Amino acid sequence: MHKKIIYTRPHLYPYQLDAFFHDKRYAWIEGTTKCGKTHTGICWLFEQSVVGKFKNYWWVAPTYKTARIAFTRMCDAIREDLRTPNKTDANITLPNGHIIWFLSGEDPDTLYGEDVGAVVLDEDTRMREEAYHAIRTTTTFTQAKIRGIGNIKGTKNWAYKMARKAQAGSPDSHWAAITSADAVRVGILPQEEIDDARRNLPEAVFNELYMGIPTEDGSNPFGAKHIEYCVAPMSSKPPRVFGVDLAKSVDWTVVIGLDQNGYICKWDRWQAPWGETKERIKALVGSIKTLVDSTGVGDPVLEDLQRARGGVFEGYHFTAASKQKLMEGLAVAVQQQKVHFPDGVIRNELDSFEYEYTGRGGISTGVRYSAPEGMHDDCVCALALAVQMMPNATSMWDRL
Image (cartoon, rainbow, N blue to C red; front, side):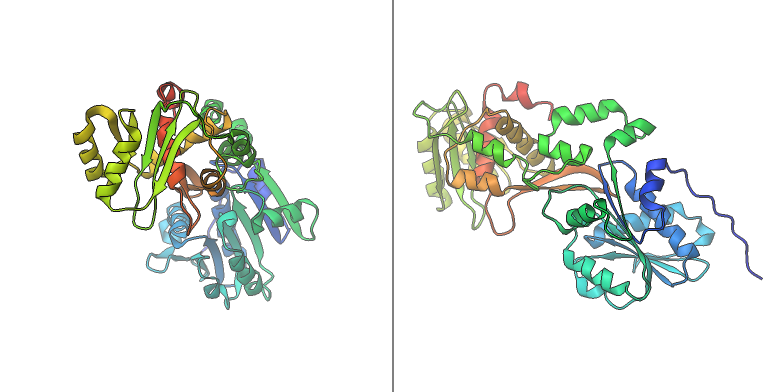
């Protein structure tokens, strides 16, 4: 005798229902941070697995770690007697025998072969295009519905292009945009939180994370036009502050000096043994206030410099949080044209610098900054350290 189970859908707002719950096979949902897209996607996939006729249902994320966040959230959402979770393989078996799998898109070759009844593509703008190709091929027989969800991240990724096709009326496709304004309107977020983010985040980051507005610069936090406006010849005025990024293995030691107006007036870049590096730094900065990267091997180097020059050198320890603060300070300075640099290596590093969102369960909790793989960000870091040492830096950026 079959057990009758009554299911009541969790409360969802109209904009969430409109984005996910319709008859279109494809839906591309461009959502800003904390707008409820992950929560809604979990509800949608669960319902598909309850009423669907196929055995397997997939939640696919860019990494396995991200997929497991959704696995945990769905386990918490389903009543214990109605689910059998497999924590090793990250899947949930329901009373009807259907299985919801939480998978990584890192290796697209692992996404071929199953008969899948429905798929959520989590953080699709960060996912490899080959992973979508594999999933689309896998769902050919089942004609499974697919829901792509993610933050806006520039205009060059495949998910952004699929969203534009759906927006233009591609057959059997639906497009939805969910912004922080929607979340404020229904009470998920307070307007004060959005206003605070607008004040404290670089323009490009805020526009993508909270407004759903893409930037042509993709994931560059400074903005190509803003960088261009700040290009200027080296200043002949004396330095007011210095920033020093110390070499790590194949990286470069970079020293950058700024004059009182924020123009680079001194800079050098080299690779050498630590003894030579310390003497070269002391010769360049003299008695001018200097902020030095003190991370890892930089800590004993900084101690030697401080012993030699007293209060001239201060340290800055890089963590994910402190680097975010430092780079957002530099982004504000670039966008407000409070710092200027010559064309060449420094500008090239700024042009190629990237950010990516970090978080849990589709909710952004921060921004990670770094150079693209195989490239350097030593000049960017040294410039950011010099900007942080400017006399007005504390008043400008202590809120970041």
